[in-house]
Image: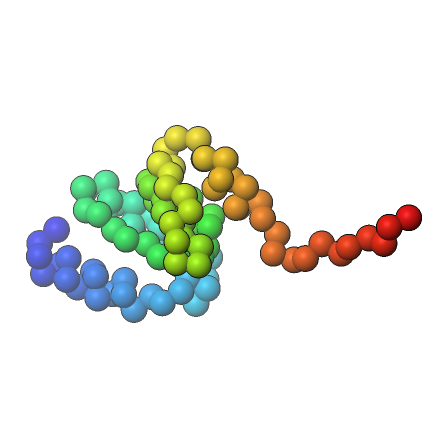
Length: 100
């Protein structure tokens, strides 16, 4: 890509604040386009909460919790246990049962 096209693309991508503003077809198309760009050797930083999108599009992942790095993963390999546990985490509190 020429420098001009890189700047135009960066401006367009920076306009997308959150994927939840896009429909599923647009999300899929964006993911495909990002993978095409990355295949050319261009590094892309994706900051997103949509985990399925991140796992499909990204090669590497850095997980932040409360501003601290809690996991680094190469997504071409098996997910580290800490990341798999995080992805299974349910933030809904479990009801406490009364002692019998």
